[in-house]
Image 1: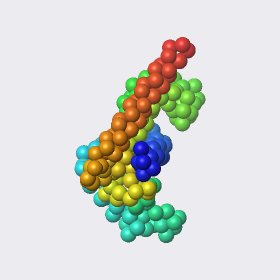
Image 2: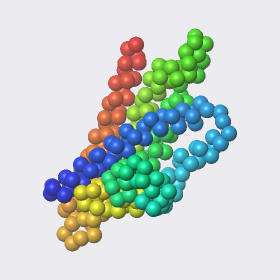
Image 3: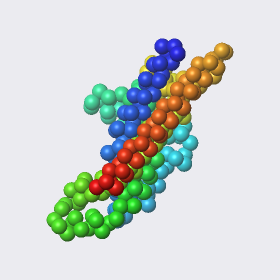
Image 4: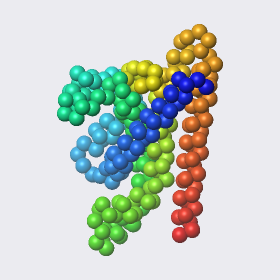
Length: 228
């Protein structure tokens, strides 16, 4: 592989890991709200969370551009207040990937939380534990396989995200050119088939390793539960 191809691989891993780590706390919180909460607007929140799965990725990328771009309201505020620029930066690619992978993460975690017996949570509450402690000591450990699955799904989605990323941060080699963007570039130039094939195989290998790792961790957690 050429140095440019290795750069695309490293950048994709950096973007995917950052997107997953940054969105995981929010994913757990939103999943818990949707699974356990009873409030007005719950259906609307659920719709908004899953909207990136329905609309074309280019639409999501365009909305990010007009919102978080330098002339967008949020982007202008971040740049003037904190000096943070997201558009046409790898951090913007991480944001786009986080938005696209967030619905998959939330859905997996939500289903896992809903599978937890509420009687266990109620029993802990009657013994004096506050809701946050109940969640940290009972709900979260029991739904941990779902959390891992959600994180892996978000990571895998981030590794393969193309439409929203290229619309928001373009395709800048060494800065925003992730694996899908690099593969697309190779397919557009004469003699680029070999490079596209190499990066395709690398992308498949990384995704398979992530899925196998998720399955291994889930089985380890399940075995520990049975042992205890």
